[in-house]
Length: 261
Image 1 (cartoon, rainbow, N blue to C red):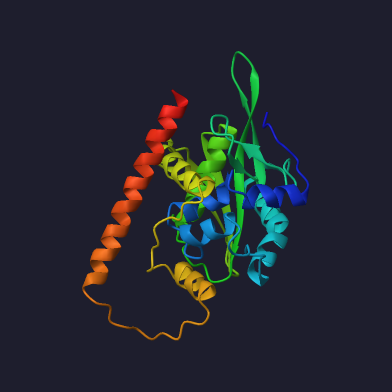
Image 2: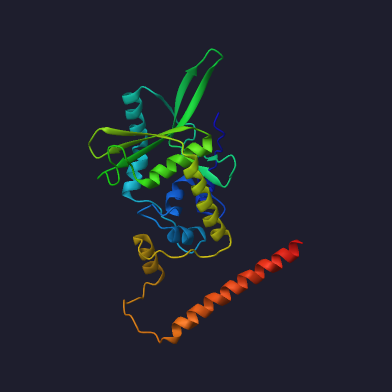
C-alpha cells in the first residue's frame, strides 16, 4: 500500500520550492539532463532569488491531457489504472524523506501464487509532446527516465511505465525496471544540491546551458554585451580570493568540530 500525504495546493507548491525538499520532477535538472532548466536556475528559485516557473500553454495542455492519456493506456493494455494521489498527493522516499514524488497514475496488478494473492502497484507517468523531442521507439528524454526511477524508489516498485502521446501518432509505452546503481548516483547528487540550497552556497555555473544563459540575462538585464580587457594581475586577485575562501571554510569547519566536541 502506497503511503500518501495529501497537502493543499499552497503547501504542495511550498514543498516544491523550498530548500529542504527535492521532487522527482526536479531530479533531472539536478543531474544536468533537463534541457529547459539548469541546476543553477533551480537553485536561484529554491533560495528565493528568482521567481518560479508558473507554467505555459504546453504545460497546461500536458496536465489537461493526463486523464485522456491514462484512458488511452488502459484501453491499449487492459491494465487497471488508478489515481490515488489526485492533483497534489505526495509520497516520500522511505530512507530519504526529503525526496518526494507526485504520481500521475498507478497501475495495479494482481499476482497469484500457491501461498496468496497479492496486489502490486507501479508508477505510471503520463506525458504529451507535440513534436516528439527526445522520444524514440525505445528511448525517452533522460529527465523523464530519472523521474520515473525516483518514483519507483519512493513507492518501492521494481517496475515503472511512461505513456506518451506524441503528436497525432499512436500512444507510445515505455516500460522500465528499477536501477539501484543509478539511484545511488541520484541520491548522492541530490544530497549535494540540497546541501548547497540549505547552506545558501551557490553552485558552479554551467554557462553552456541555455537556462543558465537566460538566468544571467534575468539577473543582469542592463548588460549591453560589451567586453573589456582586464589586467594580468586580476587573475592573481581572483585566485587569491578563492584561496582565502577555502581557508575560511576550513576554519569554520574546525570551529564547528570544536563546538561539537
